[in-house]
Length: 140
Image (cartoon, rainbow, N blue to C red):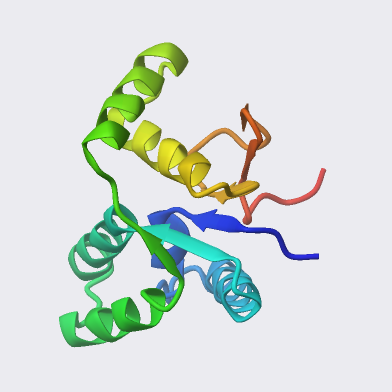
């Protein structure tokens, strides 16, 4: 069963990465499954980071990246407010996370997600009811 899941920008960026075909296919399949089930969640921060990385690091044509943003915005998109910034700052200090990672974790928790898909955070780490899952990690 698919659960409400938050997607970090690095997972969305892989949907454009022609140099990492396995990760690209995994990211596309994961996004499509969660999006179709109505369980995909992203934040405005994730959309911003996706555009910046896709166009700057992958040299994705900006018009293509904008079209992808239009697709990604079909998910449940949440936006941070001032209280979210304060909560993320506290989480950053308490959990020794970068502020931006703490913002992602906080927004995923605020959206009541069970899973946060991210390649950048520690696989298996838990924050309250939220589990970090690296979707590209091979089973050992």
